[in-house]
Picture: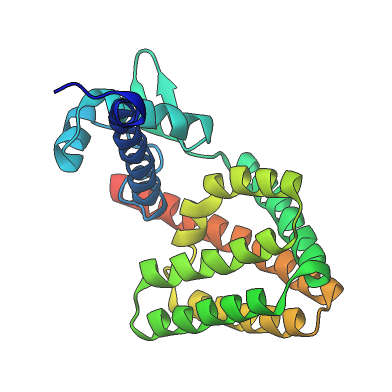
Length: 239
């Protein structure tokens, strides 16, 4: 039996839709692996191992790696293959400085444009974040933490700012995740988020802007501290 008309067209599109879903899912999995440190900065990726782990062929994997390379998460080399990108200290400092400005501007605009429903959604994310903190679930805590920052950026309703924010944020997420490994840093971040909610409720753009800028610069300092400690531990181990 032959398929004609709209039914035939729909069947022709199905493989493309499935490939798109696989592509998006695969990119999402690899991003999460990088953010949560499963794939560490500087690590050379083993394509065969990843294909076996994810039950995929090399073609979709390589397509996904190209996307991550464009986002600055992966470094592709004709000779070395794919490596998780490692920022230099200078690049790290400069990128966090830029992100602090983007977050601050997002907060200022969000206080002018956010709706009550959006604030309620952010509050719900905050309470979910507290629940994950109580369970010592860093991955769950971090995903809600980042969702709050993301919602504030979306509430700014500035498409150009949004584009820049997303591009820069992908490059910093793994570092921001690692900065929460110590319990006091979790709790300090929660205090900051409670102050963010107060500023949003009051529609106080200047206050929220200042909190977000300080919050990001403190993240930068925490990341630098972690990297320094790791470098010292590595040097001691080699000796």
